[in-house]
Structures are given as structure tokens and as C-alpha cells.
Length: 113
Length: 114
Image (tube, rainbow over the protein chains, first blue to last red):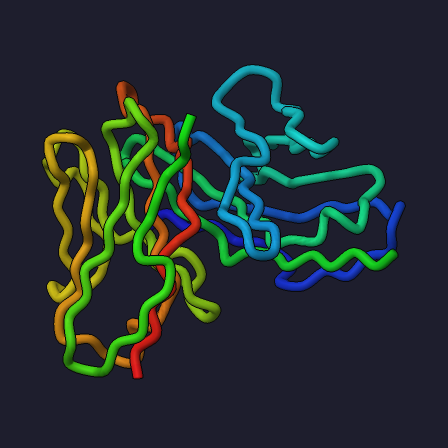
């Protein structure tokens, strides 16, 4: 069965620190990859997506992610976090074979000023 | 452009009751998906509807059901509520002219079962 693993459940950083959140998936076929973010009290919203092409994708608010096919990974990065990045981050995978979006368990990020 | 609208936002029910949640997708979006979000299980896929037809279903018991209307609005129903059904129920819509997995989420309906 298709699954998505996020390496960290809770991450605490100080402002200006660098961020990397790990995501691995298990599916051998073609996939579309996503990172969604849920800010406190807000709805889940798309941060960035990868369908094909350049494996390094850039999203909103300075976030980027790199797709490494050989490692089945899609890690999220940001060079310098801000207090406003405090949120829960979800990695998600979509494949035509399963025809549904599968989410990882999420990573709660807390950024301290 | 209005986003995905879910009603009610909050509700409290007791065990054994049933509940109906409503979702209005973004205008022009024809696919509606439902997810259950809990602290322990995360986001779990319930089902997806397109043009009034259920196209995909997750691993939930038959107490969970849904439907979609001709205007793409969707409802989900949970019968014989159990304590474990307490969760945030999220609706998401997409254009679905070709499935890509990109979804637009509503704010959710938070159900508490006592």
C-alpha cells in the first residue's frame, strides 16, 4: 500500500535558523508530490507541488523542496525561518494508480523569536 | 473567488446519533474529497466524488457515507456515532478535469462526540 513518512513530528527552531523537513514515500510508479501547511486556526493550504521537470521546486514564503527519485524523498527546506512559519506541515503523495492524495502524519514546527 | 465552504464549523453530538456535514466547493470545481483529521491518525481519506459519483473510497466503515449533488455540493453522513468519530472533517475540492492530487481545502467541521 502507498504510504508517506515524515521524519520529525515536532521541530523547534529559533528565528533565522535553517529548516529541513524530511518526507519519504513508498510507491514505485509516477507520483505527484505536495507539501501542505496548516497555520494555527487556518485551513490547510498548498505550500508547493512537484509534478515533473526540475526536481527543485520553489513555493510560497521562501520554501523549496527537492524531489530525489532514487530515494523516494521530497524534503522541504527553508534557509531562514520566521516566527510566522510556526505551523503544521504535511507531505502528501498522489498517484494515478491509487487516485487519492495520501498524507504523512505531519510535522509541527514551532519557531521562537 | 470564494473558497471551499463547510458547515457547520463546530458541532457536538452524543454516541448513537447521526450527523450530516455539508461542503460547497470552489465555483467550477467538480470533484469533492473528504478527509478525517485526528491527532492520532492524521489525515485519513474518506471518499471522493465527481459528477455525483463516488470515484474512490477509503478504509472507513459503512457508517460513513456521502453524496454529491448536481451543483457539485457534497454532504457526508456519519450514522451511529462513536466516541472515536470525534475529529476535524475536511472537505477539499479540485477541478478534476485530470486528476493531479492538487486540492483546495475548507476550514473543516469539528465534530465532538460525547
